[in-house]
Structure formats: structure tokens, C-alpha cells
Image 1 (cartoon, rainbow, N blue to C red):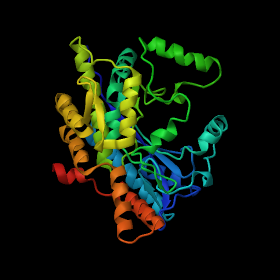
Image 2 (cartoon, helix red, strand yellow; image 1 turned 90 degrees about the vertical axis):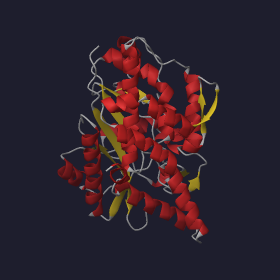
Image 3 (cartoon, rainbow, N blue to C red; image 1 turned 45 degrees about the vertical axis):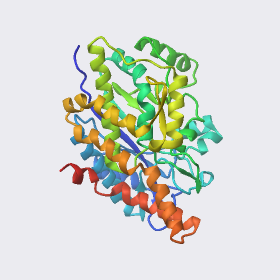
Image 4 (cartoon, one colour; image 1 turned 180 degrees about the horizontal axis):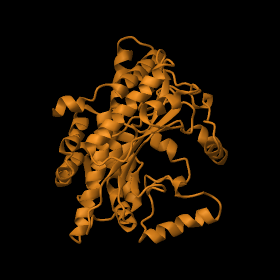
Length: 383
């Protein structure tokens, strides 16, 4: 069995804020997208809201190139936005923005989406991380999609960055997941027996005129419409760049591990979406500090213990892909926490120091700006 290329590509969606107040902008300044495109050869696009901006890396053969692309794109957005007194934040929700005050982007696709989703579309001021892994064989793409769902809650837990919504502590580490669940064609995909069966099911909606193609199927994981990749969409957007790299590393190593089992005529045990969805809820609610169900043991296990086991499970694959240090950064995230935990700690520290509720939320936004474009700690930890 020929080994896939395991090429990588990432999309990150940033929120644009005022440098002074930390407030989310209601409208993107004219010319901003063009400035970023000039700096980084056009790998930038609109998102549903005018206050968002999306970047996309090129096709990267390994983690070194992926890290370089993401780092340069983040810097390009920060540099261009800075000319307007703005800054990007990499987080899946803004700590205090009011969604009713925001504007959808211009363009036929976004206006059609807003018309279709109505009030639901007005709440979607959320940002995500999408990781593409190159797998040329469409049948293999479907087979790996069927198996990897078990691990999606683990990846969500290590990426959480949306604890606040409209100035409130939601009690969830990933409120983005709850907001996005209100849209159609989300959640876990069905288990498909083949590529043709997947295409046949999508074709029912396409032929009925409901969607144009599978790009409007927004599952936690899906075969990409445009590229020969399997696209992971379940995670929040990590604020720190090296955490994004770790999520991408875990994902590609898991795919390679499942391919390796298939090559040996073995498979990962399949569990019903009903059960895996319970783990996803626990990751959404509690993040890294909670527990997930170990279905093999039939009991709850601390999430970080499961992630430590996962690191060892895919270590041979990280060695083959030359990304062991990036994989081990997962353990660093477990020790110091995700963006969601940092945001909550910053808020609590500010309040304890005498800040008002509003001032503490602004401090959270300022911290997100700094962490989004700060020099990655990965380099100091690994070199």
C-alpha cells in the first residue's frame, strides 16, 4: 500500500480588534485584505463577518514549512492591521463583543449564507482552525474519516479558546462549539462504506438545489471539496501559534497511525456517534481539566492522561514524519493550559487586583493580542 504524502495546509480565522480598547471592529477597513495579500502573495480571504479575516497556508510538505507559513501570515496580518490601529486575535470568540452590532461581509456567498441561515447567521461571530492533510486516494480518505472521530474530542480539548460570550463567562471552555451546532449539516459525519456512497448522499442535497457542493457540509471532519485532503474542523482556534502546530501534528500523526493499522490489516475500534458525542460535550464543557470516557476501560479518565497516552501511541508516526518535538508540545499544553484557561485566569487576576468587570474583559482582549503574535515558546523549549 503506497503511503500518502501527508502534506499539510491550515486555515485560521482571526478577529480584528481596536489596539487601544480591545473592542471588535464592526467593519473592516478598505484595503486591509489587499495589504495582507501584498505581503503574503494573496493567501488571505474574507470571512462571514467584516470583522474577521482568514488566512490559508500553502501546501506544506512538513512541519517546518507549515510553521514558517503560519508565522509569516500572522505577522503579515498584524503588520497590515497595525496601519489602521487594529490587531488580530486568534481565538474562537471575542470576550465582550455584541453580535447584534456586527455586519456581514459583502459578496454573493456571504449574503446568500446570511439569507439562508437568517438569525442563526448573526450569531456566527466565531473563529475556527481547519487542518487539511493530503490523502490522494478518496477511498482511504473515507476510511480514515470513519475511524478518526474517536479522537476528535481529544483535539478539541487541547485547543479550547472560547470561554466568554458577550461579556459573560459561559462556563464552557469552547462556546464556539455550541454556537456552531445551531447551523445545519454539522456534527459528526455518518459512517460511509465508500467514496461513491459519500458522494451519493451529498448529491441528494445538491440535486435538490439545497447546497451547491459539499463545501456547505460543515461536519467536524470532512473530505475537502476543493483539494484531495481530509479536513479537520472540530477544534477551536488556539491563540498561541505553537499550539496550532501541535493540534496539526496530533491530527496528521493519528491519520498515519490509522493508515499504519490498515496496512497491517487492523483497525481502530468503531464507536457510535452517540458515545463519541458525549466525549465531545465533555471536552467542550471542561476542556483539558476534565475527564473523557475511555471506552476500552468503560470509565472516566483525566483528559491529560489520555493525551499523554495518545502521544505515546503515535510517537512512531511522529518519528516517521519528523515532528516529535511538535507532538510533545501537547504535554506542554496540558501543563500550562489552553487559551480558554489563560483567558479565565487573566480575567480573575484583573478582578482580584481591583479591576471592574469591563476592565478585566479588556485585559483579556489585550492578552489575546499579545499571545497571537508573540514569538513562539516552541523555539525556546526545543532549541
